[in-house]
Length: 67
Image 1 (cartoon, rainbow, N blue to C red):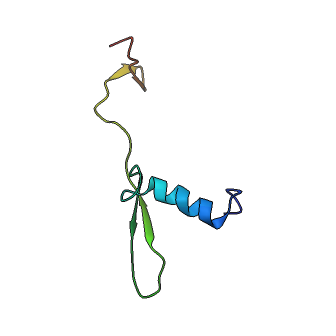
Image 2 (spheres, rainbow, N blue to C red):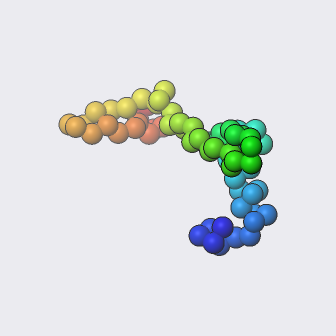
């Protein structure tokens, strides 16, 4: 919270916004029980269906105008 420069309530809302239950689904929280904190897992959010061009050793995503 100190690093985010916000209060407890605001930090809780921000994390809930990223959660898969209440928000957009970038993280998943799994309860452990027995007074232990929940584990937070990051989900993959890269779109692998996008087309790529290969330039030498680099892969570059095609823009909408190039498709």
